[in-house]
Length: 152
Image (cartoon, rainbow, N blue to C red; front, side, top):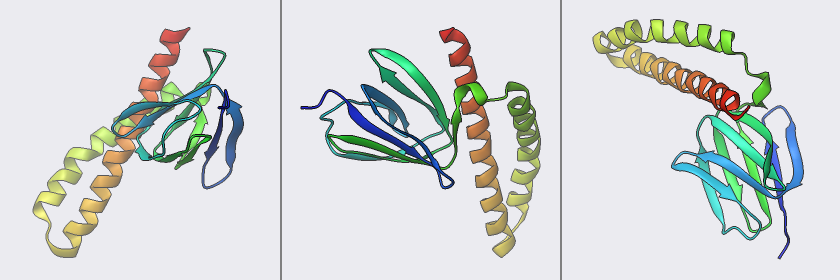
């Protein structure tokens, strides 16, 4: 059995990472899961959070992903992410400002949904779902920043 697993992280725009690693920990929607060589077959959705890449028992990379899918085989872990960037590229001030705007817009949008009907209501529900997802991503970015600061 090999002592490393092939890890690939892909976004719609590009291949972010493709390398052999000792282990990778992925933020699955049902909880984080670690992938080592010989892992059983698995397909999972992933939630916004940080992927930790391990070499020699140490986290060598932290990559923020905004959601997507992971496919695991005994030899490989492939993550198809909506968005991915190195954890050190996250901008706390911009993320906090974005979260403030989102949270300021949510109550009004919820009120509009409650009053609307028909196709207007469906359109507003779609907008509400998008805004709530954007809030979850912003909150996950702030959590990733907090974890990175605690690890230093």
